[in-house]
Length: 112
Image 1 (cartoon, helix red, strand yellow):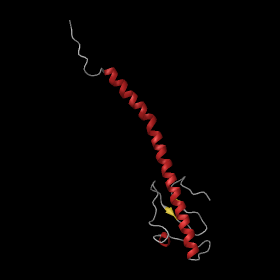
Image 2 (cartoon, helix red, strand yellow; image 1 turned 60 degrees about the vertical axis):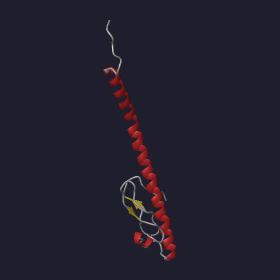
Image 3 (cartoon, helix red, strand yellow; image 1 turned 180 degrees about the vertical axis):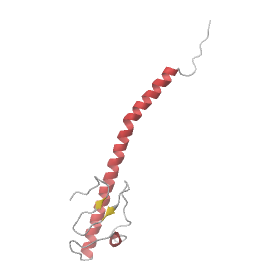
Image 4 (cartoon, helix red, strand yellow; image 1 turned 45 degrees about the vertical axis):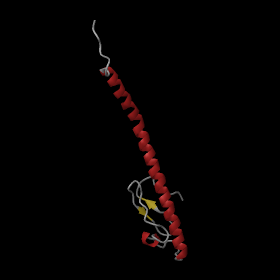
């Protein structure tokens, strides 16, 4: 009589587990990427909103009229604690009074 050892896994079982993990990763990675992009967009829009609020406060206090230029030096630290940074490595431009601040990343826009 032969005694068969049952320790370990067969090659077929290992290949099946590896294939299953591959399928799960193929499904999960795009979902994580999409969630990260949406979070970056939402954070950027909140930053743009804060810039707009700080710019409006500065315009009222400094008695600026529409079209007058505004820089981050005018806003930080009096109206904002620090200069915000886009989470997707974009650059913010505060724009003149009466205009909406912008980000260099496409899709990161504050609606009027």
